[in-house]
Amino acid sequence: MKQVLIISGKGGTGKTALTASFAVLAGKKVTADCDVDAADMHLLMHPRIREKHEFRSGFKAVTAKDKCQSCGLCRNTCRFQAIREDFTVDPLTCEGCGLCARVCPAGAIHMEENRSGEWFLSDTPYGTLVHAKLGIAEENSGKLVVKVRQAAKEAAEEEGADFILIDGPPGIGCPVIASLGQIDLAVVVTEPTLSGLHDLLRVEELTKHFKVKTGVVINKYDINPQVADEIESACRKRGTLILGRIPFSESVSHAIVAGIPPVSYRDPEISERITAVWEKIKQELV
Amino acid sequence: MILSIASGKGGTGKTTIAVNLALSLGTVQLLDCDVEEPNAHLFLKPVISYRHPAYVPIPKIDYQKCTYCGKCAEVCAYHAIAALARSEERRGSVLVFPNLCHGCGACSLLCPEKAITETNREIGTVEIGQAGEIQFIHGRLNIGEAMAPPLIKKVKQYLNPAQTVILDAPPGTSCPMVTSVKGSDFCLLVTEPTPFGLNDLVLAVETVRALGVPCGVVINRSDIGDDQVKLYCRDENIPILLEIPFERKIAELYSTGIPLVTARPKWRERFQKMFSQIQAMSGVPQ
Image (cartoon, rainbow over all chains, first blue to last red; front, side):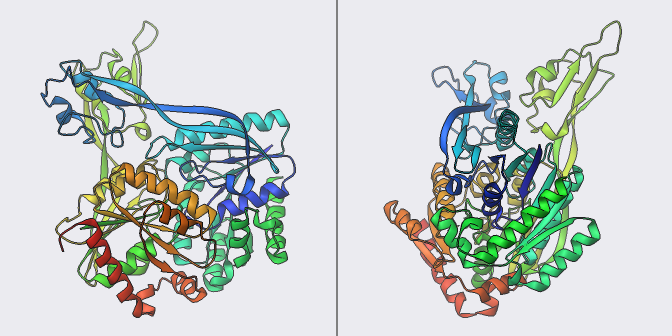
């Protein structure tokens, strides 16, 4: 069983559209949406939820007004400026360290377990999907990603799947790092722009740092073939695999509006190019 | 006035809006808070005059004083310290995991032997410079660092509330976006008229409402999708302040790092007009 992570560095390059397309092509697979704070895979995969689980992570401080003596020690001690002037706690800023509760001389602060989100195991026309929803303004996206990955692996083992396809988050921070564990191939989807190239180099440094085999797909490449060439040249210099190029097409937006993975929509050139990329990915996983 | 530009979905055009707004307004500050993948500098090409490493505190154990009592491990909410008591067979040990540490200070404050002090760990760099009339500040997170918010806070320390501040936020709705948008007078949410754009816009609106920041919407590539975003904004009473139709030429300019208002000066007026509307709506004195 091989685990393929689709990331980008830069947002909006086409990770979700491509991951859903790979899910159409891949045969026996489980798909996971690890972009937990802006999850979109369900819009192309149309899941029927089989199991729903609560995700609890970390704590938040809560003050009891009746016990509070307004001494202000909590406000002075909190490193995150999470305690307001009226000694109530701002849950959006509280990082759950618990120090205020420990120092409060009146015992007026206690820690409550934080219900940060939910995760789901679902059936879709393209196989099992594990996905999640992080609560608004929550932390611990990395922990929820780990949960989704674990559940996907268990489902894949149960089903005897050949692949786990993982739609990753943008950026290089904790949710991306949490997505990189046990990955056989990181597919970086980029675009032929200065921003795309800049961000690709950073996320690729991250995958190399974690010793994960990395390949690049240049999406919408004909917007700037010169920058596309620069990207391929940079890849060659760094020993990064070049998995393919996909042209820009308005049909991809139409496919997304219609809720259909682009590989299954009406543009034969797009279908052909995405399929070629998937074939290359399979070759690299052997 | 502090105006943040956020989204939910990546790649909708936050940096495009932030950069072009700043170029249209004259003497402003532009803070690029997308410290994982900063892009604004690619368009503004600032002359950097200061570079500061950014540090977070981590515990440092004085083994002369440490009795391996384990109090530090007990009070650490993030499992960033592990302590093994001394026994007949072995010396005790205390292990710090810097990547898990949130810098709350609990261990050093509560160590009964005063054996823990704090030392600095570098997580990234803050760069400050000038691009014409624009004072430019951004942060670059070191590759492999999990947490963006501490660096975002360092970038925001340079924020001058007496000026007009344009703040380019990272994508998503979790802690990096929240840390960036918190304290803004207004938040402009950039979206696209597709199911992905709408899904993530709804999450972003919930987040800025939880932060108590008024918001408005910019629809980028406004003619490539459906009308669901417009209907949502109408139902929620969220003003749509700008619509930018898709134009391949604009995408091509973007790909080479040329700002829209540089290539099409008529757009300056549109951005200035939008800014005046925002000032009126946010109640910040002009």
